[in-house]
Length: 220
Image (tube, rainbow, N blue to C red; front, side, top):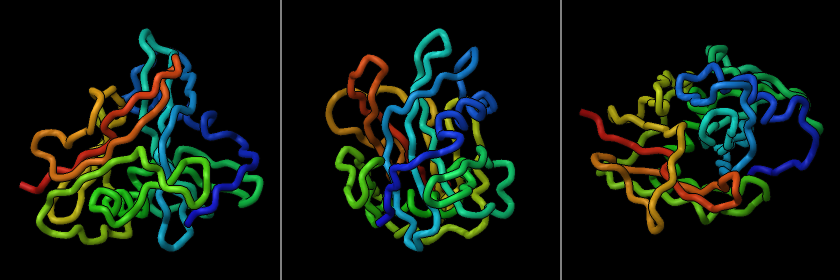
């Protein structure tokens, strides 16, 4: 299990995201971003080398407050071939310099997200070591097990709503970057999907909200 270090970060995650968010096609703000941590979860790297965090932030800089899914990976060295996915670098009070990437382009995070969809991995609490996050739900109805993805950076593509990543067996993994509240009750996968991941976050007024984070669609 990954160990959560409660230490200093320079710059902070939110400071990195404030500079990075306006470059994304799915960002809806109109001014300087004001990201605030609102929720999320972590996944463990089986090899213990890469930190994986699916961070949810809210931003009130636009005409309407928005919530975004900003998955990040934290590495102790640069990821070859992923310069375009670098969010920035930070100094970690315990681990030293960390390279922070958009996790949609990191093969380790995509492999573990697929493992979560299939039920082979467990979502972990964002702030506490060795603690599962019971608010994260998932499903998988595909007939074949998902094989590991390649070790090269994932060829993810952004659009106005989210990010799509090729998955094994010709499937497509779609991450919802602009998060929207779902009705109360269990969250089901979208029509045509064979798997999904959903979770919860906190609105600026303190309300607890749940919504869809990612969906897996079969190959054609």
